[in-house]
Amino acid sequence: MECGLAVDKSAAIFDIMDRGKSVVVGLYPRRMGKSLFLGLLEDFLGVVSDTPYGDRRTRYEQYAICRERPKFFEDSIGRYAVFKLDLKSYDYLKNRKDISAVGLPAIGAVLPALMEAFFLLLGRKAIMIIDECDAPFTNILCDVEDRDLRGQLFGVYGSFLSSILKGNEYLRKGVLAGVFDVLCSGVGSALNNAATFLAHSGFADYVTNPFQRAFGFTPQDTWDVINQYVDKLWPARKHCTDVDANEFKTRVFTGLLLQCGGYRIGAVHRIFCPLSVMSFLAALDRVKTSEQLCFSNIRFWSKTGRLSMFRPIKAGSVDDLARYLRYLSNAFQRHNAVRKTNTMAARLQHARSLDGSMVAQFADQQPEQHELSDSDSDSGSDGGRTGTELVRICTRDEVGLIRDLEMGEHLTAATVMQLLYQAGYLVPVTEDRMAIPSEEVHRDMVEFYMELSEIHGTPMAR
View 1: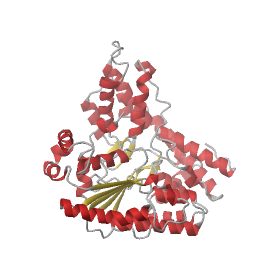
View 2: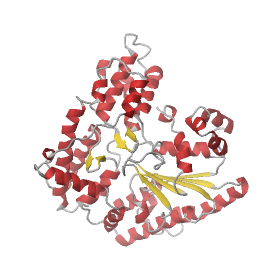
View 3: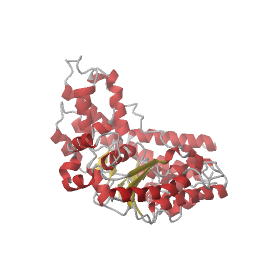
View 4: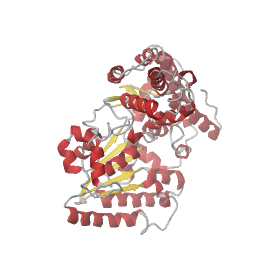
């Protein structure tokens, strides 16, 4: 199923174009719908499209961007030359030594000239969209062992970004999306003119973080998708006249709330992984009654990153990783037991049916806090110290992270935890606590630690 048909993210187009510097970078966990939104941005703004202008205009007139920003809508739809790159496909950076005049360097030399040509033709500056902007950096880290070659490749990538995004008078806006905050420091000064927005860094609203409404599913989005699926796409709907549709929707929605948990990110207090939601609904093709619903095997978000990035861990750091895991896992299990019995989500599951106002009430409610105590730790009074330590680690300046990554031979436990935080395995729940966001992520986190323990031959207790 195509979640873009079910969820209206168009209002975020204005947020992206109107706020921040000329280059903005949105860093969110994997599987949060970043590529889908960038495709929406390209489709709305681009003067060139597979869809005729009139058809596009008719479609977007039904979207929030037309209602909320009518002047921006008229001035922007189909008016720009849009250039879009997906850097995940540029694997040549990993090993190739002859890199002076091929691939990204060649593209970086041509794009500014094309932008100038379109400016002379259209009288408008261009839009540059780069998806998976951190992929070349992480690929180099994973696959290039020679430090000199690694540094050379970093330089090539930095020069490419600088050539198209910095000092380009024909660029209206550069929009980049990725996962890891490795760009600004890792490639020199290539992006020192960019505003970077990390999903988990603080609790700002979309006024200060323009990507806030672009990525992820809100509870309302999730409810809308469930309604569309059950009413229009669920294969068993027309044959199961004895199934109460409202009750079935309620079971699906509250089950996802309790199982997936959601992320607390900014003013959008809860967002859910679109892939998890859509993949679970697709799996309902075989479900014919409410009693057949099963939420215990949701595993769509996990295993999307490259564990090879984390493998060169210092032997002495494995013990620290085990300590962090025990603290986080114990805290999650304690909180999760409470969350499933004493929260609004738990109360909603006993309702026979939900309506939009009940979902809105849930969405507007402040997320329940993780009430952590010393007993959440693996060693009694160590709990408070471990929690504070994790906050300091996860929110430390990215320069320290980049320095550790560029060295490459050995990673510390702190570096691994910061990368996991940026990848969405951890989220801030209070000013002094980090936590695992959902059961799905908790299972994946435990398996990740188990795999590392096997690599290093060190037992790591659950």
